[in-house]
Amino acid sequence: HQKTADTTLPMAYNQGFYNLFPGIGAALGLVLWGTGHDIAGRTLVLFSCASMAAAAAVLVTSGRHYLRAALTQGTLPLIGLVLTLLA
Image (tube, rainbow, N blue to C red; front, side, top):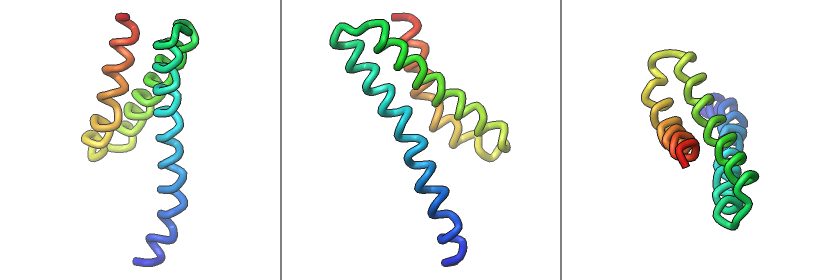
């Protein structure tokens, strides 16, 4: 089991940061948007949410058994994307 953990650890470490950066982008976009930098903030929110939603869609193409994880990963960004477009 140690060999599996040793193999998985770098990937999990990378994936954690891979997921962190779009989240920071969306949060920064909201801050910018809320402080009067409408175009930059909205653009950053749209890009971040679209990236996260697209990553969830790609996850589904990896296999049907990833559907629940993709829904968990992609639902909130998709809602954010839609709400931003409607704002």
